[in-house]
Length: 87
Image (cartoon, rainbow, N blue to C red):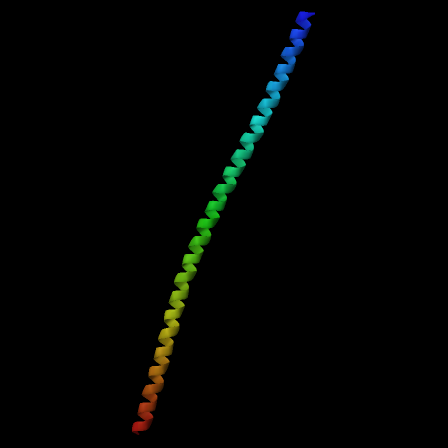
């Protein structure tokens, strides 16, 4: 009788260990997935940051080009006016 109860207890303990192992494996998998998500999010943030910097550089270049066109146009109008007035 005692042997039978001991065997049942041992069987229950083994099942408990299996359940614990299953829970631990599940938690480890979740941890790995969350770490992967964090890594990918950080990579996306770095990429978006680089894109933002590149766009700002391009915007500055366009502003410079626009300014030079405005100055060139103004100088052209002034030079043309001077030439027309001197004739």
